[in-house]
Length: 182
Length: 308
Image (spheres, one colour):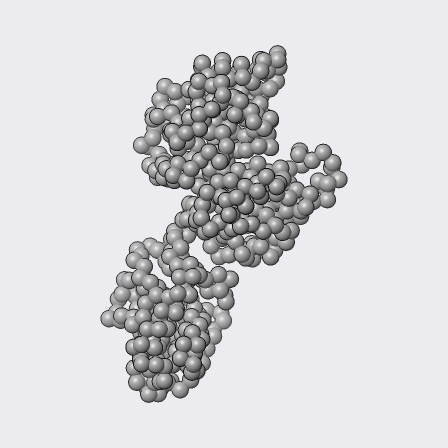
């Protein structure tokens, strides 16, 4: 057999860093919106929704009030749909009322910005938010659209030949963000 | 004997400081990346391989390392039977003679402490290539180098050592090296008959390395970054019934592999018997063949450091 090369290049965030970043982002959301009264947290499947759920929990502890939470499946709204193989299991969107609300979209990684664009598009199908903000755990640069996150866990400059993989305890048994060879 | 930061001999894992390890690993990285720059570095120098116990793999790895650096090698695979040892010559005398012929001696011996005795009388560097149940420091170096290459870090790694921990010198040497790094967590997974020895556990306590002893491999697999499998060494059991009772109890197959983390690493010093099923060889987490190849680079770095 051939000796394949290793894939893992570096761990960019461990469990503690991810936890602290989420807490900081929660504080920033509260600060920017002067509370959480009209805030709705919406995560993009499949990793963003888990992070969003955690953010909603932290916000609830911080502000002692329930923050509505939704999950958004953007697959059908992507502009590269024709390039991607169809996915077997497809979790569908679940959305609270977003009309007139401040929606904080949450994703694990932002790269070209195409997922975020698709998410905004998909969100519009559910109503007309007052504003949309964007929170990401990792910003790896290389934007192809005029989109800039409002809340960033960590900036990680990467090359196009690399990939960022965010592992989430609920799915992967560990919280960790790693750089892997493309 | 001279164990200084200059590193005259390579006898045991404990002698390596963290700084020295990092320098060696950086050099091994360079050699791996640009091997042509190191051709001819040791031209004109001679390595003697004195093996009182057979070990084809370790010996070939050392010889390849020396040849690739432009040096030359000589040696015997069976020093015990064919050399003057059979006539009753002491190890010390043999070393005195050979150190007159060679610029470095690689020694494999069946008695614990043999390398230390050799170093005491040798004019040239001695490299311990395994002394009985004692240590095998270059194996530990390549193991640690592999962990660093696969996970891009050593501090904070969580390692499960699995199998024959009482007789396996590779896991002992590796545990000693790991204790020099920060936030290391170890799991010793072994049947009670061959559990980790107390001297090493005392060393870990002293260095504040946390470890857990268990027999339940399945429970440990999702917890760790590195699964280090070892062979239950049949040749080290005096009672065959004990060997029969515990052989083959830990085995990594496709099902077990599914429990290992997505970016976990599966290692084995090789040779394997049935601890790792060949069906997982193609899994990117299976690192044992890369691990073996790393042995060449780390041994080149070591020879380069000792001789140039």
